[in-house]
Image (tube, rainbow, N blue to C red):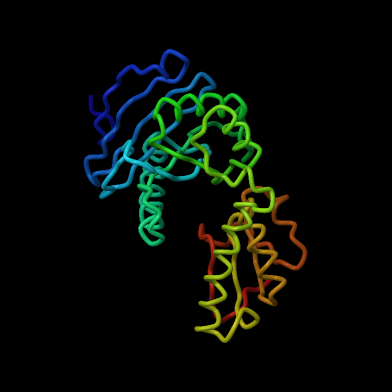
Length: 260
């Protein structure tokens, strides 16, 4: 059957007997492939593999890799498009660092109330554990938006296909990601404006990564404005709250300082 430009085909798996029902979705336009599961906890799980990947969810190790993103998307197409775009980003990252992984991503479409997710994350991790086990080592995941180390610890108790630095208590993957962003921004600021102290930033999204980026930029002497859909997250001392005036961007860098 055809649905919103995507070709879908349902088929049964051992996972379906335990709860999720899997579908194969192929995006006709860009060549990416997406697997879809409907879960008992009322959410949809999408696992996308990037266009051009030489081994899309192949058992030739190490398989596909990309984090777990959980969000309340406007519709199915939006969730699928997000999964495909993020999988392509992971494909590029793995190519740069020559990890051997194929670019992939796990996206969960769920519900929210007043900008807060209403999903039972414990139930989701149990369902996702079945999904990863059913894929039999062809997909590895870790933290991304709205998933954290506690989620990964639970998921890892259900499936061995989790890469999240859990055994290494000294390594926080969110902090590692944030410092990778900071290193890039510091190099750019030094080249363009003479350093972080001469630069102004807007950090959009103050979760596990963005909040660290904002605080570390402040500590480096930069001027920082912030925005998040959750007003409580914007209460970072020393920053300006951007409110609705700022566009939906993650980081903006410019010579002029934004007005607080």
